[in-house]
Image (cartoon, rainbow, N blue to C red):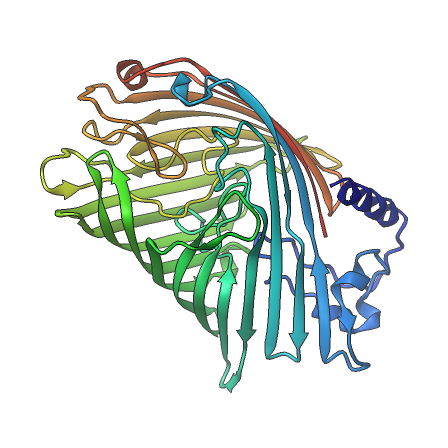
Length: 466
């Protein structure tokens, strides 16, 4: 771990002194997937800037650069402190801990048709073993991604990609399929992608990887399956994020648990999403419906979510205001033979900010936010959110879909308001820092169903990547 910190410090020092060529191409942005970052432009010496990291991104094995290697890494240290976690009903409601995560990778490119990609994850947490969780805290040394991608030439403007092996998946807004929180969510299986112009269709059949606390013990979760057909139409006229999505997602969980009980879950999700920007306005609208079976019950659930941001670029600090509204259905009656609880499956880990108490099940929320840009990489975000139960017959769920509180016949809907303050500094392309404070005040439903202490949270991290 000390060697990692030293390497990161030396890399930053070298980067500060690097000379950038005026004709160099801009590097691709970092992504949570890493395998979709294209550094092939570095084959041309005229496109290089002389930055310290470029020799790591294009390592040719022959003079023509037909076979080449790209390597990279991400290192993050994160501190978290909770008071009255889960409103005081957590197994250790007051605690603080330090997490360490590292994810080095290597991509071997053989021509333009074949790529072999591998990525490790190193995850540790200085946390009480009684509450340590392999899904968010610790997984030791393990394989996060390892796959072969084949891109055969088809002609006619078609581009085909076939990826087989272990891989991280992110689709659309990330409300249903995302990379997860601290320990990344990976999947074992195959993805076939076909693209023609602005259209792209992905079909996949995978099993999620189940992380464990020890090294090299992560394997496919044999109790869950995920399959999908996800079609996207890029809308470049509506900005770089402009897209229209249509998708079907199938999901099976042998050990599903809801307020209604535990049983086999077989769920089908149909949805659409429209995102883009025009001038100072950005938006992301999404709606889904879910059908299927849960034990002997039918499933009928739905969700709708909207995010809007308006930026004032002419004013000092370039302020922006945002509004988020979401409805994620709950179960009206646990004994009526119908399950109405929406299942976000593999949702974005930070959907509700830094505080990881609540999950997107049986929930209504309204969030207003304000952001400020101080320049030199500094930014500030403050927001207020109110949460309600969507259905009075259903309980309250955590970020992993776990049931935190049974409904217990409570007739009160309010879970409580949350207030957040987050400060971040992106020192340069590779090095960033962030700190946050969050408080959730218990509402009537929490008062009715158990401990109802106010939850306070502080957290912060330092992250280096190349």
